[in-house]
Image 1 (tube, rainbow, N blue to C red):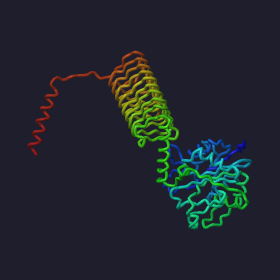
Image 2: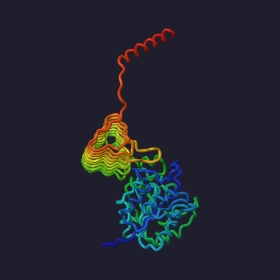
Image 3: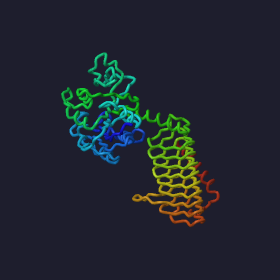
Image 4: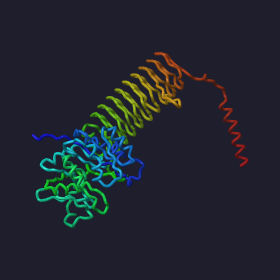
Amino acid sequence: MTETRPLAVIVLAAGQGTRMKSPLPKVLHPVGGRPILGAILEAASALGPQRTIVVVGPRQAEVAAFAAAKGAAAAVQDPPHGTGHAAQCALPALEGFAGEVLILYGDTPLLTAETLTRLVAAKAGAALALLGFTPDDPGPYGRLILDADGGLVKIVEAKDASAEERAVRLCNAGGFVLDAGLLRELLGELTADNAQGEYYLTDIVTGARRRGLKAVAFDAPADDVMGVNSQQERAAAEAVFQARARAAHMAAGVMLADPATVYFSADTAIGPGTAIGQNVVFGPGVSIAAGVTIKPFCHLEGVSIAAGATIGPFARLRPGSVIGEDVHIGNFVETKAATLEKGAKANHLTYLGDVSVGAGANIGAGTITCNYDGFFKHRTEIGAGAFVGSNTALVAPVRIGAGASIGAGSTITKDVAADALALERSAQSEKPGWAARFRALMGARKAAAAKKD
């Protein structure tokens, strides 16, 4: 049985990302509802690394903060002198570490834990393993030249390749795994003797071969190593992510009426037997139990939904919403930081913000919880079995007791006792014949105006 060695991970994320044309650092752009760097760190974390280091640029405090929030150390590359130099900048954070080092690039959001595990396993019997892939069009990529035994001899950039080398389809995807001690030695031997005056990480393959050490290449799925350097490439990666997510959810028993119009986030969790209509978007932080119905044109983010609930169509559930069993949320209903207990209903045209709604309560059309006074948010509590009539404004903080009824058109500013009826309306008055007299008067004025024209 092969002993598993300790693992450290280095993610090279110091690139400027100028082709993104965005003030947001490239590695923080989202794919599948999470930053690209987050996807890479999550995939790598599944391998149980003892240390994770993210190499950032000198003006990338946001990236360093994100890395720290994910439990990774940040190493600053300042000024940048190529990928080899970036890896050198991570070495101080590896002080005292003995084991394997996995080096990844920070622009590959579709990497999976399975692919990384297979890359590490591919190193068995070799000193170094490189992540490769076989694209449909290998034209612009560096070629991986193998010997007769399948060992990696060298990496040749496309512009420098001979006709024979350009015919090779196996290309460089950029990731490496090798022993920490060997990495330190090989990085120490890098030179910037090239037109760009930079230190290239790929030159460590040459260094290993010069020592007589074996290097190998692992041919990964092309989608897994798809890089993102522009908004167009980010969109292409998003499309691949969504296709994967749709297939995975359907394989798990989720019914999608029109898969191409449903969009998931990386952490979307949905139980089997849930039915999802057309044009539904799941933002981050959504957890849905089995047997839920999500009707078309809904947007959900930061919400949990219990079994048997029905949502939509045209509903928006915002962060902090907790939807209980058999709850009905209907068309043009918005919730935020709202808890609705079993069997509660809000079927149309309602805003429920900073509110708890008891079991079996009914919220009429046009109800609004007035939760914000311009400075602070306040909560509304609606008891079990309460009935809130249409077009009601509940001015928080306020409590509606269990079983209470609120008359339609009321503005409620005081607590309502359990089982009480609360009304807040002006007295209705009536003027007999007023409408007929008004029509006659206005008709005469209109006719007079027409004669003048």
